[in-house]
Length: 347
Image (cartoon, rainbow, N blue to C red):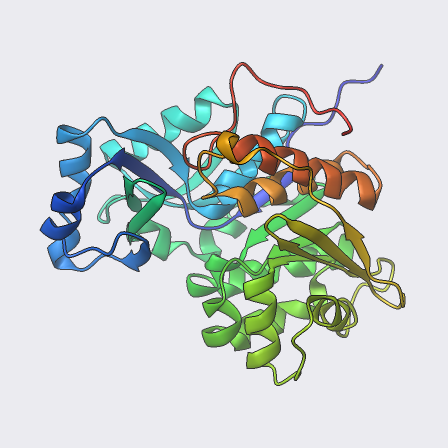
């Protein structure tokens, strides 16, 4: 049997070192945080990262949504199948990040900025609540120059599929467009995650510029609703919005666009361009007491789904792989996958 080609999936977004620890109300009060929230760090929040590292039993995860997805896809695929791009600093946080991805077999090619710290996300866990404080740092400074560097562009040309996390629309839309155009020209799948409601709300222009290139677009029900509202679709039903996304104008006509909307424990909705039927795939049930942390479930779904697409599985199987990996992830703490490694099997 021929050896599997390496680095078939290339992912792009904003790498963050997740520093997560169990805290209490006093810690939340110290930094003026709400128990269940996600904010960008202000000056007053910056000491929290060292505080969590030094004074709490912090778990360190190679985070940032698409890096979670990249780790997830690599979890399923053959060794050396996934490469991830983004911006990082030249500091101890970057060293920890590199060590964390090395342990799970993910190749990273960071644009290194020696003057700006690596992006960090402090996560304070109290009960079932998560308070996330993010400083994007060097992740906010990714540029087209890095993508077009000959050694990096060689990885782009070598890859068989591309995955872009929507948070990157806040950083470097030209890099997204370059990948999108490459995908269309070479008829390779271009997979995009909407990532958060504020992306279609406040980054509508770069998002819409990329839309004609989407072969697969993934979002949850909140992101779908935000897209509908910001684009004046007047639709509230998840199936109708999925259909609208699937049928947006498309450049590469060799592939029908597929829109995938996840809804937590409700069925995953899938619409295909030009097809009237919108399919629903029920989620595999998991006993409530086994659910540890739903943070990162969407990233895990995208990871399993991308692995399915890259390995040439059917759409139905790729959705199933996404659900399988999300199910594993929510039993872990943070956007993580169990070790020893589990092997995907159809459920």
